[in-house]
Image 1 (cartoon, each protein chain N blue to C red):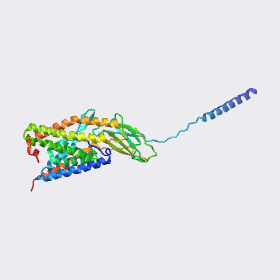
Image 2: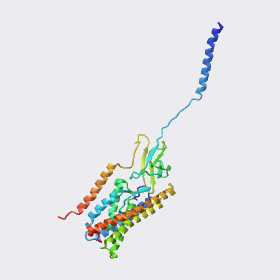
Image 3: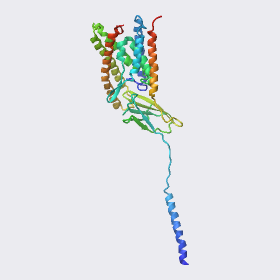
Length: 214
Length: 149
């Protein structure tokens, strides 16, 4: 899922950074509009830690294996804090483990962070539909948020990769391996959806104020 | 008397014949030249430990970093070997890529360079780095959740 250095053309890196800058500015402005912007920082910091290590948790899906991303979960639980959290998590993954890279940080952050914001909007829909107090519906919207967050990110990654295969490569072979990797993420989308549902149901039971609309 | 003369001539003739045949053998002499070629073997694996089988390899020579010097694919174990041109010394770049994932390794070719190298970390390094970063996040959380004095 993390696009490393040296894969994308320079224009894509620049466009990625521009998109990430815009999304970061939007998120921070929204966070500042809240009553106490620092209130959710501990929650965001802990989930950034979870996001940071999630990429080491590999799930074997033959013939390959995929790792957890958790961007949907971060969106659902953190709201506008999700984008900066994902950006910081990705930065440390790139610097420490070369998961992703510094030139592709903008692309990766936009690719995972913007779907996280969409996941948040989907999760908040339950308040508009007056289903916010119902535990079953919280679980269902949690599932939708977690699954959509990752699902959209996978689709964006697929589109970016398939349109930027350099001509010096065996394009057909690379295309089919990108297809295979994308398909391998389908079970992961369900897994992360379920995982997000379990977490929001658990949070609603023990600490419902964490899930309130901000 | 005669017989003793013949005895002396016969070995002489054999000697001449023998020396003649030696010269003919020398005309078939072999000449061996040698150059030591460095063969570079690449082993590519994902950080889950799984080998990058059938991944595409692109080799760039230091003389031209724009156009690939060689392209190929790894075998089932993620292995790829190539012989760089010993005339082109400097840092060769080898990119292994599959489904938008991959890495570039920089290999110095020339005199007095390391014979092995890798782009990854050991497990201990990874655990230590993860622990430090996680502690940074937890510390941030603790700082912002402290009770106001």
